Length: 292
Image (cartoon, rainbow, N blue to C red; front, side):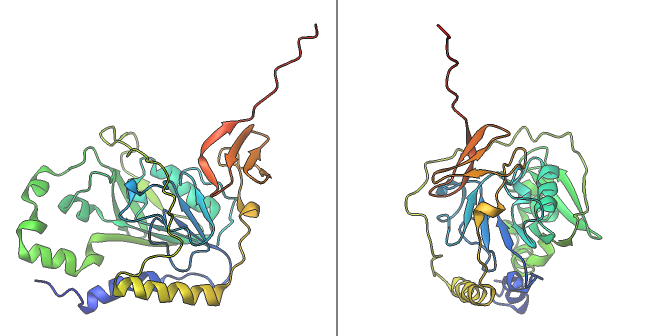
């Protein structure tokens, strides 16, 4: 059995604490889910239910519900954006990566690598990704299990040596990129539509959104301490209303107690209990007077 707490594993578990996050400016965590980065000032998630993650959504700081391919943030609103295991789920990687560059000055992207996906394919992952000399090479998967030989062999489960390598050296099986100003990427097969993939159904929002991450392990305890450290040292005051724009046209929004209004698109978006840009409504217009 591989050593769970080898030096390599410890270094890997601490990688989030080593990100080059600037001291000034706001930090966004895209796809924050149940374990947002401790340094993030703002969180963005697409789903509020627990059908899409292992645990409840954590909304312990300003949180926005929106599609990461059409984010409701002003241009360059953030100094740093963290996209941790999100890109591999996106059918339109160009839109997602262009949005990251639009709303932030720099950031960090991490995904399972193409090698990971060949050895242990996930049917919710639609992309295979490699970092080749600072450029993300992206291939849309033609099926959930794209390599019949390796997938059928199931080497990680059937071989103790492969299992030790896979779990003991995670840096070999993940793609990581720190970017500044722009993201260099190449989508190898942009016309592939990943028709085999289906979006998971969305359940009703849980009333018990977790406002503090649960402490269930040494890793969780360490993240809790790191979160407290960032809250003390950064003390960022976030006014979401100043950051938000219409995700469709990027116009400034009119704000009232319960909703945001885009006068250009004539759409409204939910503001409470969490800003939600996934289900816009058309502005109701009064019927014209008959003149009779």
